[in-house]
Image 1 (cartoon, rainbow, N blue to C red):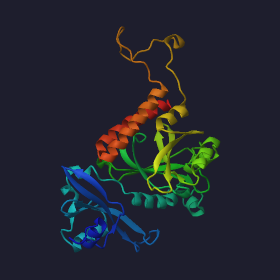
Image 2 (cartoon, rainbow, N blue to C red; image 1 turned 90 degrees about the vertical axis):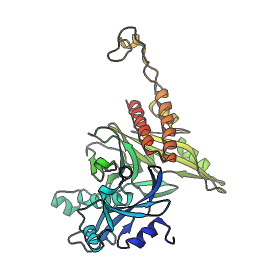
Image 3 (cartoon, rainbow, N blue to C red; image 1 turned 45 degrees about the horizontal axis):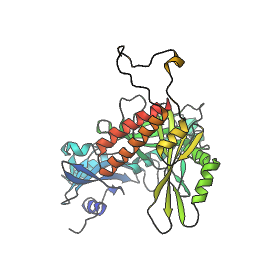
Image 4 (cartoon, rainbow, N blue to C red; image 1 turned 120 degrees about the vertical axis):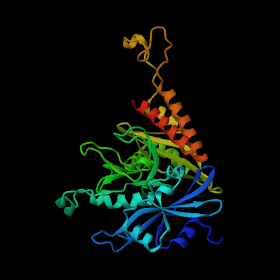
Length: 374
């Protein structure tokens, strides 16, 4: 009755665990539950590099709190963790086996942002396999910076739904890009897989070193160097209003990278920012328009479908019989309008907490973006 905050409640039960600062609410079988990530940590693990005040960290426990009556259950998701096993031996019955977690809750587990960010910081050094290269620090990586609300900050991991290279079908992942130690171009990106059948798996995709892929700060610089965009932002950022450039999203689409950054306007007398523009970058081109749809049209151009006499072929679909109705190919404005509509649907699904519907809509959005890319 007294410890009603999620982190405070969990810490009262198991104070020897470290807790994530971002519990999230889910629905299962018509009931609301809070899910909180818990970590086993130490600063005395042998032969481990310190990071801050720890040198050992595992996301071994998931805390589930009934949002109505407050029951707390701690599930052991990593039975190979020696620290968690020791705590379990000291306090028998404190941790429940993962097999006892309802299947509906398993589908809501996600890779923690803090955990992936910590792993990325360490991997930026330890991805080097050659001892000489590692000793000379010849191939250090960094977490890229981005501009947010007028300040430069380190990029944070972000959740998205996409089809990973070489994988079948879209999945819910947490991703974070890397840049080389002394340059701003993008060298790789890390993905933490969240769908339960692959939960906890980390993947790293490296870009060819002979090919320049723009990093987040290079796109931010291109935005600043675009006279039309910078003039408009400076005009808005006057007395009475404030321009907030949101988090830059780096989205792998097919074999290319699409960059999307929202721009918000906030009045001095109000703390309710409103979406004013959407900036989209692709290769060397950066555009800013009122909506994602208009930005995609501006970026990829407006192209009408080719006429049969221009190509020497008749329009149709594979396997179509003569006389069957033929659907004309989608134009770029149509695809952009479709992408905008799907974007709005995805936002509605997210606000409603319908993550299954959110995933399906984002799958369609990715296909529309791939069509635009082609």
